[in-house]
Each structure stands twice: as C-alpha cells, then as structure tokens.
Length: 422
Figure 1 (cartoon, rainbow, N blue to C red):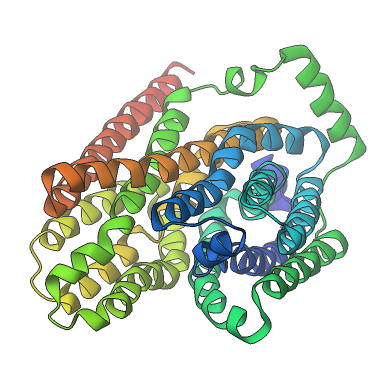
Figure 2: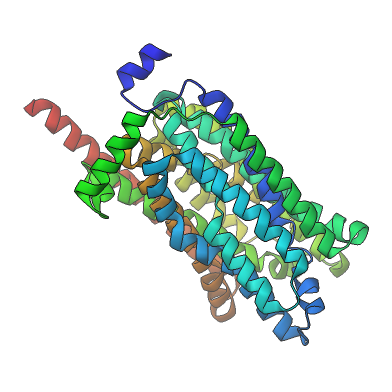
C-alpha cells in the first residue's frame, strides 16, 4: 500500500478502508434521519397552523426544497474549505450542525421557523456529500470506483429506508419526538466521525494548501485543472442524472393511477415503483464501481446513460403496474454506478489539492438537477402528457451518452498527442 501510494502521488490515507465504513454508516444514518420527515411533513405543516390543501402542499414543497437550494449554494465553499483545513473537519461540522437543527425542528411553533431550519440544514449540513469527497480523495485511485460504489449504496439505502421509518415512528412516539430521535441518531454519527475517521493530512500539506490558495485566489481550483473538458462533462452529467431521475419521480403516482384498476392500491404500487429503482441502484453500485476500476469509469458512464435511454422508451408505453416496476428496477441497475464513476473521473483529472473544491462544484450541479427536474417534469406532464416526460428524458440520456463519448474521445486524443510530443 505505501508503495502504491507513492507511485500514485496522491493524498491517500492508510486508514481509507476504516474511513470508508465510518462514512458509509454515517451517511446511511444521517440520510435516514433527513428523509424520514417526508411522509409526515404535510401533517406537521398543518399542525403548525397552515390551513387549506393548496397552502399545505405549497409550504411542504418550500420546506422540503429549501435544504437542496441552500446546499447547492454552499457545496463548493465547503469543498474548498475541506481542501484548506481538512475534509474530516467538514464532516464533523456537518454532522453536528445537522444534529442541532434536526432537534430544533421538534420545537418550532410556526412554519416560517421550520423553513428557516430546513435552510440552515442545507447550509450547515452535507454529510453524505462530504463523505463522498473524503472517500474520493483519501482512497487509492485504482480502488476509487469500488469504494465510491459502496458509499453510494449506503447513501441510496438511507434515502430508501428513511421514508419507511418516517411512516412508522410518528404514530408510535409522536411527530416532535421523531425529530428529537433523528437529532440523536445524527449526533451518534458526529461522535463516530470525530473519534474514528483518520485523515492523512500533515501540517506541511495544510500549510502548502493555504499558501497555494493565497497565491491563486478564489478561482484557483478551476484554474489548476490541466484539461477542463472531462471535469466539465462530469458536472453536466451529474446534473443530467439528477434532472432525469427527479423529472419522473413526481409523476409516478399519477402515472400508476392510469395503469391499475384498483385505485386503493395506487400509493402501494407507486411506492414499490419508486423503491425498485433505488433497490436496483443499491445492488449494482459496488459491482459497477469495481467494473469501472477495471474497464474504465468513462466506459461505464457512457454505457449506463445509453442503457437508461433505451429503458425509458418502454416505460412510456407500459400497460400494467408490474411492467413499470420491472423496468424501473432495470434502470436502477443501469444507473447504480453512475455517480461513483462521475466522482472517479473528476478524481483522476484534478490535482489533489483542489479535489474537494471541484467535487463541491459537482455536488452543486447535482442539486441543481434535483431542483430543476421536478419543476420541468411537472410542466411537461401538464402540457404534453405523461409519456412525453419519459420520452423527453430518454432523449436527454441519449444526448448525455453521446456527449460523454465525444469528450472522452477528444480527451484520449489529446493525451496521446501530449505523450507523442514528449
């Protein structure tokens, strides 16, 4: 391991496996705590004094989206500060801030306070995104695809389990007590991160990072990237992936209602459809990450986008709910390794000293996709029909595959040309 790290020239940590599994557990638990409010958020908004169906839905959407909006704004900042002061420190900060804000949600008295705390969680939080940056930068490059695939499994599983837990806890212990319990779970992640994560960061590296930041200024991270085309392609691809997923999620319940005869089972079948894609991603992420380490991360990205584009076509023409479940599961299998591969390509094409800064930009791009996707999907469905959402997303995925293939080819030609000149 030391010899491999020396040849790689990276800032890999000898503790990278332990860091990975601590981040895996922390991301899983914090995602559960953060997403369990989804099933009862409208009920809580109503308890805070909001009346009328339209107002309750509107405030629930504002409260939910506030976190993503705030996180998109500050992700590059936290990534840059992680490069300067240590990525473990960013995880400690995020978990502590999330624990405090989540606990305070159980004490709010009106909806404005709830929205404000959701904004604060977005500003102060970001444990799973911080974990992605730490694992990407501390893991040997030849193992980064596998490691990020394992971490992606924990993140996806947490987001899948959270709403299920949120449907069970409030009737048992009450809505406000659920927030207090969530804060306690995140605080445990804070303790584990503080005492178990070991970052390979020397005082000399810290001083060098600060000196380089002072010399290059705020735009130094982007300026230090030798070839910006691969990184720019990954920013676009990450935003495209989230946009494509989130453009479809909001219409699934309405779409399922058109497919099944027993309308009392609409929510059940819709939940299964949504979970099928997440389950497929959980199962495939580590394997596709390992495959990407062997055959190339860009090959997996192009193949996953192309497969997803093909699978979206029959989804627009299904006639039974079980058909949609199967196709969404296959799509989850195809896309499971996409985010780990995107992160790995960035990791391989940026200097270690600015990796957190650039990965922060990638996370911001993904948040933009999460916010823009539902808005666009709802607009297209309302004006052009449900099938248009699937077919439009298919075209976006196919365009993304073609774009990545083109950028990869040009990048490889540039590398070969530089090698020939030298």
